Amino acid sequence: MIETLGGPKPSRNMEIDERVAIFLHILAHNVKNRVIICRFRRSGETISRNFIRVCNAVIRLHSHLLKKPKPVPDNSTDQRWNWFKNCLGALDGTYIKCLVPVEDQPRYRTRKNDIATNVLGVCSQDMQFIYVLTGWEGSDADGRVLRDGLLRPHGFKVPRPGYYLVDAGYTNGEGFLAPYRRQRYHLNEWRHGYQPTTPKEFFNMKHSPARNVIERCFGLLKGRWKILKDNSYYPIETKNKIIMACCLLHNFIRQEMRVDPLDKCDQDEGLEDLGNEDVDTINSIETSNEWTT
Image (cartoon, rainbow, N blue to C red):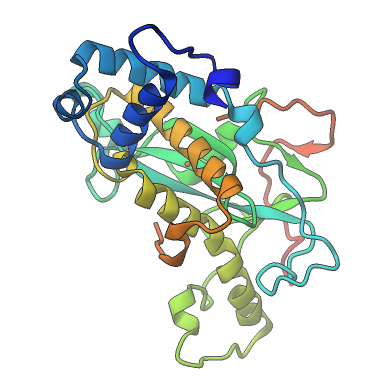
């Protein structure tokens, strides 16, 4: 797929399989060039040049690998999702450590004092990415990143009457369904046999495991690609491309493998969709009482 659709062709000195192997090894293990030099017997310049070429080739496959949103049907039998008819999936932000110039570090510093970029991830019910927005500083709020995605000409679109599940940090309104605040919500609060005593607690109990799909999606992403979990040696511009490529590769694995070996690990820990379909979409966030009782 990379060779036929992505662009790079085998050269006289390096086949496409070797290029991809080098690229995947760096993503999976977050190793420096000198490690790859020893393992593949290639020069540092050759490794760096081909890493970027393969990364760009993967990104060019976004229209083939990004998941198209599908609403939960009325007759759904999925116990996690059948409470949320027309729901398209879930979204959230995640921090990914990055390397930036010293003068830019205050803007990228998170509340935990890490230097990171804030990545918006939107995923389907089966944990495939629908939309990913990279490049925002770690000090920015998730809501601001979402607004930027909605305002971009070829950015994030929410087709009516669909909506996404979000956490309490986002505005509750058309297209975005948040839980009730000041009520039990997180999964560990429903363990040990505790049962909801009010309609709001019942709603939160159903909302939490469905929305958690985005947390699991981030967990699988970072568990598979160590370059996203730890700090790396690439400038922020390259790191943003790497994040996009990793999300697309995540989708490819989910689409091609019947069983994802990392699926068994409950890890909680984000490409603009260039589709330009003429549909009624939501492109702003407004507070709404539509979901409240």
